[in-house]
Length: 174
Length: 294
Image (cartoon, rainbow over all chains, first blue to last red; front, side, top):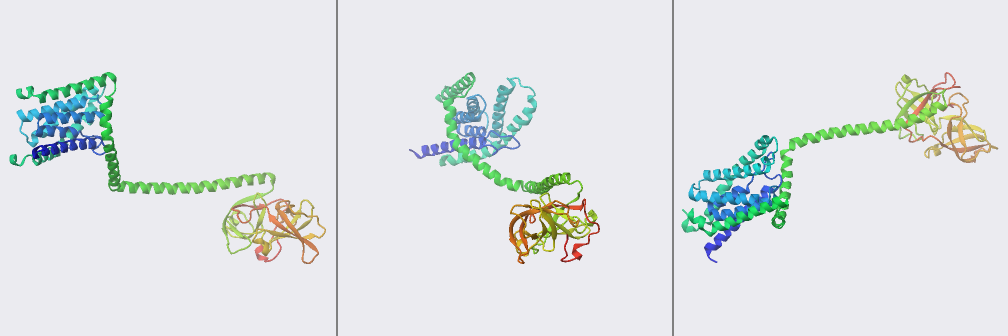
């Protein structure tokens, strides 16, 4: 096993551990509960992986993280897997073809991803069923969740940038 | 972009996306999650979730002590106050319950003796050095109590009011050698005097003196007041005969009497202020130390 390959295995194992730990933290009752709002911290983690490691790795991690979230979620099983995979692939491609990997751009990508994910869930889970008085629910639960998750994307962005540099081959470091 | 769309990466990702959509369709149509995948992820994550939840709760509980310290302190104060109130109510309840039971007995007594004019009183003090079980009650001359008023319970005669204050009275019991009560045996009609005895009083017993030598008195016979002298009402129970022996002089019999009233543990008593046959202007027995009360 070459040094490069070993480094890559350790890097992805670390990513796996972070995604899994994020899922545990996100799912643990009362740990991140802030006035009844719990952020999706798994999604920013996957978006960061997609941004720094590319659309394929991001997509795989998104798929895995989505299935993990599906196992504890009330949404249709596979919904998170599909959405996370799609969003991570899009995030990975957009950093290749559209954006630079600046902290602000990554945070905006996370915000966009969370907004899309929450909107899809809100649409398929609530609007489509024709529930009444959904506006207060959106303002008091869904919107704060999006904001809260976006705030969490900042430390994730910093941490993954540092991690990415740490595992980067020495000769390619700036 | 064209390169990505033609790469096997894209095909793998598309396959995963199709797989995810298939899972969704299956879950939506069957109404339940994919059992195998869902359970696999759950089984893997459960131990970690348990640990995480346990740690979170422990840390949360620990921090809670500091975060809610002021609130908890106020709550404790409030609960302590409630506990004090509850204890006070419990004491009141027990007192009222006991009083109620005794008043029921007193009511029955009043019904059988309509001529009695009662005053209920509570024992508020006992002299621990007094061997004749004397006590103090919470009623005095302001309540119409007078010296030499008989003190009874529903069970029987207790004693006599010895000294009277404005709001309290001292009572001497039938165990006291200074108290003498005219009595008779309801079975044999033999009369005598019940009084205390130093050696018997510690056992809660008293003696019946001056019984005729030829008396047929027997153990278990009920002794009641004779009413002679007008200090005690007639025919009120005093005690039962426990044993009989001949007097030292050999001229009469002496019986050991066990009072029917619980002299040592009595807490509520009745003071008979007046009754039919009561003598008028009976003197203060305290002023006639050693004198007979009846």
